[in-house]
Image (cartoon, rainbow, N blue to C red):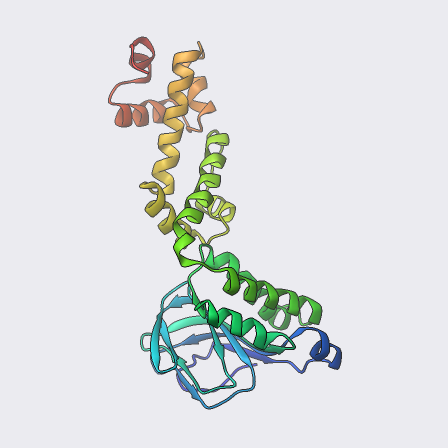
Length: 281
């Protein structure tokens, strides 16, 4: 349903859910979920809302308060707030957010552990992947038009587990591991027409965020790295086989022999034939 609220733009949606008695006894259960597009006027300042809130910043930036301490929330951040107590959050620049208000028999215990670990706010390695659980919950109402309460509980449990185990100091190591998987995939498929969307999917990231992470971790854009990987593979064929230059070009994913020779010379500074006949490795 549409919502009229200060700062919430017209293309936003919110859905409310009345949990079954069984869900209240057994599961994490949903009170409401939304996908909001907000301008700079959006701000929430409540005394109580009888639920816990998980909020994900898909675009833009905003803020939240914990015990009068303001925390900045940029793109990719998740926040967990105790809405039984006074709570404040919003944006001064505009943002796109997914969110759920939920409760459950163990919700308070989860929250206390997360607070003890100081993990109420997190920027996970793969925010796009983590956000899928929020999007799946929202999608049950927005597109599927059917709710499965055990699945809702499963997705909420998955999100809370991310908060529990989150350790920001481990991001660099995990990022490197994630990128290694993509690098291995490129190495095994240099002959194919690999797209940015395909590589981003392998890393469980949005194409935009994947490009930023890849550049930061590897030092090249995904396209630049793919070209270098193709040239390095071509070097191997040139030195270890008698395959014609044209055949090597196609085996390494180049669209034509001319394109291969031009690219090879730009990167290596000599032609493929000169490289084959030289003592270079």
